[in-house]
Length: 224
Length: 228
Image 1 (cartoon, chains in turn yellow, blue):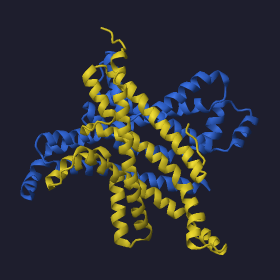
Image 2 (cartoon, one colour):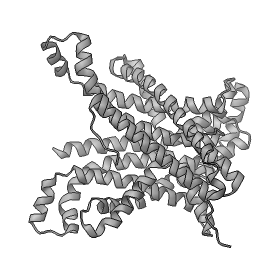
Image 3 (cartoon, each protein chain N blue to C red):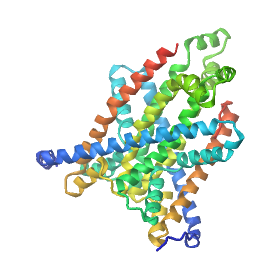
Image 4 (cartoon, rainbow over the protein chains, first blue to last red):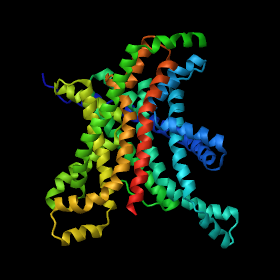
């Protein structure tokens, strides 16, 4: 028997799937914001901290960037209850993704910190700028220009990374497509629509980030 | 809790469990290594098609652009499911390992095409002009002029991409490929505590990935020095 592509059954689930895409974006956004905060703290500790602090942050970054996110979340979701810390699947995924994003953000922000040269600050001082002014006119534009492209990249990667939340029974885009697949058995149709939605969501996010970057920091870039 | 945990350890680290874990680890490495090598070959061609300016190449260029954008913007899990079910619908008798391998190849070729394109574009345009003046063919231009200069830019990100794939193939456990994550799930279902099992799996991923990360960083430094 030949497999016939049949979209009509799946089409009625599209609003349901779009709702899932919205949840995906929310998870990515929350984890990204958390990751930024951890990354800022981590990068400051790594640049200005003493030896112990640097070693701790270094171990955190090395460990989280060298192990898969999925297994980290498995560990948090199934392992931590043994210590009496029971997290719901949403919390476990969010904590896992935040910690993972924090590790990558630490590396990115540290590279940004290093890239501001001392001579730039001295030049600002020569111009008679106050500390606030030199932060506003020298350090921030510089940091934004260096950090914005890798961060918008990280955000896109994290939006795609939220798909593994489905494995923990979370009803975001991939999770909902599993549900629809179980209900209709139209696997190819469901997953191709899901793929299309992911493409739409990430292209939209890319464009928004691009124009936001141009408008805020005059960062040049392109989507394709 | 600690008593039962300590009691578990000798039961967990037996000879046969060790063999099982090592085989699973080998499958993880094999999946990403073979996938990335094939993906590199395909991605290289896609990148060359995409940068070529010949008019007759236009349909192929469009195909290349769509291919790259599709596989870069769809999550691994969704691509995996899509290919899994397409293979089923086409009645191809493939093992789940092969399905996962095909997925890795396709995604890797999409990402590596972008890395190669960035590398080729990093070579200054005057180099192309100079090669044109020497009356070299397209293949000669690439082989003799462009690629020798571009591979220093291509290799470090391509290698770190390969590393990220060692971690991403954890998702292949979802269709039943017996790699490290799946092995962890098997042990967890057998009744070993999740902390012990997934802690071990995390350590194994770390042991695989960390030396390669160091090697990649060393390579990056080495190539950066030789550029000047």
